[in-house]
Amino acid sequence: MNSSGIPVDTPMDSIGSFYDYKLIYTSATGYSAVYQAKKNNKYFALKAIKKELGNTTRFNELLKREFDIMSNVQSPYCVECWNLITDSNVGLCIVMQYVEGVTLTEWTKEQHSNAEKQRVLLEILDAVSDLHNLQIIHQDVKPDNIIITKIGAHVKLIDLGLSDNDTYIQKGRGFTDEFASPEQKAGFQSGISDDIWSLGHIIDALFPNKYSNVKKKCRKQNPNKRYKSVTEIKRAITAYRKWVAPVIIIVSLLIILLILSAVIYPKYTRAIEKLHTIDSLTILTNSLDSANSRMSVVIAEYEAQQNAASEKDRFFDSVHQQYDKVYNKWMNKVNKMKYSEAGAFVFVDYTKELNSVYETISANNPKWTKDLTIDYENYRTETCPKLSEKVQSKPTINSLLEEGKISQEEADSLHQLIWSDMQNRY
Image (tube, rainbow, N blue to C red; front, side, top):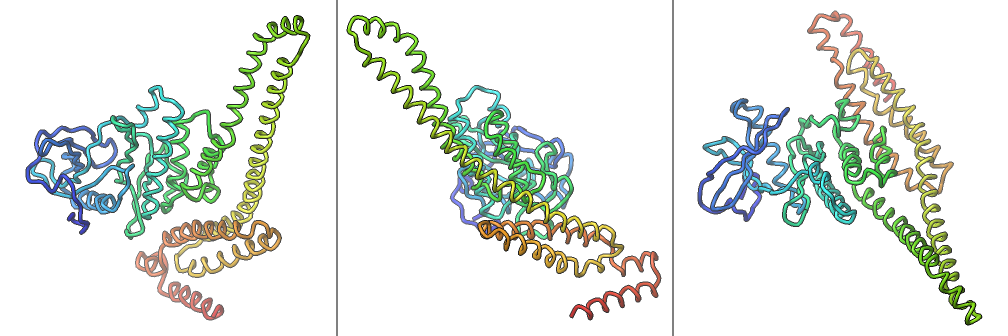
């Protein structure tokens, strides 16, 4: 049983000490170092605090936090975590599965078939989805945090040092700038949309010339316009394969048939002259017509599906523009507030106005009612914490008084103003 009370049956249960330590990774900007070590003829990875940082409470708590989050993860595509120990050589450390392989950054520099890259992409999506199902946000999904194993070329998602979940009051902060969402860089509270943004970069790394619409939606500037879950990304990828792949195959067959016709046609011509028949040429022509007809049908079906998706995207883009006007209006009001108590009713008023816009749109567009309801709840859930965070960043009346920025008389007047507002409302 590990320190979180989770029973595990791992190589750690055997008797013995670690030996043959080898430093294999040091974080350039973080606090951690990873060592390879042996025990009972098996390799382990030990994630510890960099020795130059010392045994400080702050870094110990960060390491314990990472272990607590990792110990709940049971996914074939995430690195396994077995224990948190104090080792005589490296100090407090997380004992993890040692994975031999290369990072996705290195793997994409090699030659791989589209089928291989497709499988790897789906495993990466499953890894992140498994975390989200446990209410865990990775917050640093990037090619260097994805290992492709030497045996089997399977995915192992690593480094949950910046991850976050609902358990912790103090939310994690940290990211890699190149792969971070705009809201991460702005310091807003983490959410699934952060990982969705990063997955857009991962898809681009594997398929720079494919899935352009999927990548574009993953990396929408407005998080409410991105995919709502990893499952939606997988559906979009699958839809692309379902419709585009048959078209490519049919076009390829058509080209082959055209080439064959150029070679075979002269022979058929001589046969026709001798036998006075055009049966063979008719068969070839009918085959070409049939292939071309089928290709036209498939392309038409695919375009119809894309047009329907585009219509929906355009509709919800216009919806979010209306929501954004309300949100920006109230965010501007909060920015002008001098003290946090002035924002006591911001959320009530903001939600009331936003809901009014939603109800008007929903009443005028009954065919989108269900999608509008889900989208509204997602938008409200995403934006309310941002307003809350901004309000809480303002000083309180009492703190202004203590700092001598306002007098006691001014403080009493402000408190009376807030009390009067509350009485008028209720």
